Structure formats: structure tokens, C-alpha cells
Image (cartoon, rainbow, N blue to C red):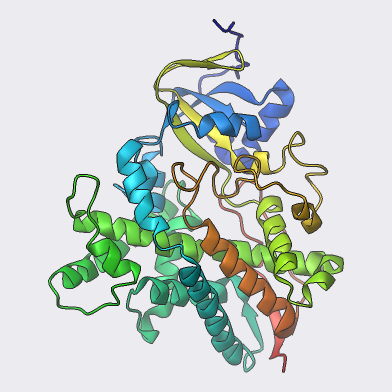
Length: 419
């Protein structure tokens, strides 16, 4: 029988406000002061355990020890994930639903993602040439909204692109805030679910013809592990679980443009368009810059790990940003070094910008390959197909706002396409 140790514990009644104030640094700060990759705190009035590092991630993604159902705080569920979506499922239901998403990740599907990304970058660049300046983050949200809708088979008229891009981005830009920002996110999700649910009804009633190989058709007719069609509202949630995170890649592309600007010596290797070099660079962007700070699960049943007792029902946070910068897993973690990915072994537990674990049976984001392909195509276009200047601007980003984005959203001027 394994011996038990006293888990390091943060004293105090509740630390939810500190989490909001400290953002991405909340778990890292306590990891340093407590000299531990695991500690106990109080969040939302209840005991919570925080974990960091690849060894902790291995435990966190053990489906026998943790469950996701009921783990996400309601404000986050209502704006970011939607109710009834794959992120909140466990066991056979999760495996079956996850397979629905993974069926879209064939080589041909991902090649289509890259083709569409290049198509809409080129279309946007033609427009930018006639403008004095653009705000890249705002423009890329529109590019990816077009990509996402065409790839999923969701119809999108030209005059609604701006509206849908704003609607989808409001779900992830302030998912956990209280007050007006949260209300805007909740309202955007509610309206978006109504939009997609109406399309699902039209597909099922045969009032709308859609490509049977696109997600809108496939999800509309998907049957769950009990051989029942998904409720129309759940189909809408899951279609949005493709559209929303695809548009959220705009954050990564803003950071990609920032990295191109801040590390020009690393850009020279990209000028040949070499696939490996593009991959190394965007993976380092995903590791180095902050995206979402942590993910949440609930202890499924009592167990002991590393001498510490985990009690059934305890909310547990895994530090995504901190694990990607953990000195036990990464050499010089606070340096931007794309070349580190030449030697990376592909572990599903030390590099977890969008969650960890295995794709097929675990909770690793099914859309990670989509993220990589959109980012690679976008990076190649920025470096090898455009010339532009960047005026003086505020390129800083907050470590307390979740998610964070460069303050200026990346202002670009004098844009020209290379011949």
C-alpha cells in the first residue's frame, strides 16, 4: 500500500479572484512558492487541486481517475463549449462522439483545409492592397470564418461574414468573465445555436441540400452509442465546436505574426517554404505564447498518486501554459526556439497547448491537426507571399486576460502580394 503525504495547501477561504487577477501565472506562481507540481487551493468555494508538468498530465488524462462531466464552470460551458457537447462526456458516450469528429480528419480533409486557407488569404490580400492599413487579428477572424463554414458545409453569404465572425469570436474572447462581457458571449452562443439548429432541421427535413461529406450533413445524421439521432440542439453545439475553435486559431495567427516580427533571425529558415521548418515554427508559437491557461476535470474515485490522496469529486486543474514552459520538460522554456521541435519526441503529455492525452481514446482536441494546418498555411503566406510594414504599436499582451491577444491586434500597412 502506497504511503500518503500531506499535499501542499494554499491557506485562505477562496482564491477565485486571485485566479482572475493572475491568469496564466496563477498555478505557476504557486508551483514556485510551494516547490511542488501538485497543490491544493480553494476555488468557487470548494477544494481544488492544481497540477503541472508532463507526469501530472499523464495522471490527469487517465480516464479511470478523472471525468469531464460537470467539470467546466457554468459560465464557461454556456459560452465556450455549449451544453451537451463532447468536452463534457465520458466513457463510451465520449468515445463514440469523439469518433464523429475524428472521421473528419483524413488526409484529404486536412488538405482541403489548407487549400481553403490559402484561397481566402489570397482573396483577403487582394482587398488589403487597396487599404492604408489593416488590423490582422480582425481580418483573420473573417478569413477563418469563411474557411470553417465552407469546410463544414455551413452556408455563409458574403453579407453575413462580419456578423458571423464576430458572433463566433465572442464565444471565446471572454468566456469566463462576469457582467456584460459574459452576457455578450452567452447571447452570441444562443444566437449561433439557433442559426445552426435551423440548418440541421432543414437538412433533416430535406429542405436543404448539403454535401454529404461535410460536417453539417454528417453530424445531422449521426447516431449516438445507443443508435439514436442526436438532438438537434446537440448537433448545433457540436457544429459550433468545429466553427468556434477554428475561428479561435486567429489568436494563434496574431501571435505567429508577432513572432515573425520579434524573431526575424528565425524567419530565414521559412523562406524556402519547407514544410518541416514551417511546422517547427508554428509548434513553437503554440508552446511559447499563451492560449488557454488550464483545463478542468473531476476526480472519478479516490486514488493516491505520488504519495498524495485525490478524493472523489474534487475539481482538478491541469496547467496547460505552465506545462508547456515546465523546466523539467523543456530546456530554456522561456526562449523562442523553433529548432527544439526537430528533436521533440511527440509526447502527448509535455506539449499540451490544446490539451493532452491521446486523440482516439482521450480528451486531446480533435481539431489540433486543423490548427496546425491553418497555422502553417497562414505562416507561409505571411512570410513568402506578402510584403508589409508594421507601424509603431503596442505589441504587448496581458498575462491576466484569458485568452490574451497582442494589444494592438497586429496593425499592418503597405500590404502587397509578392509576384
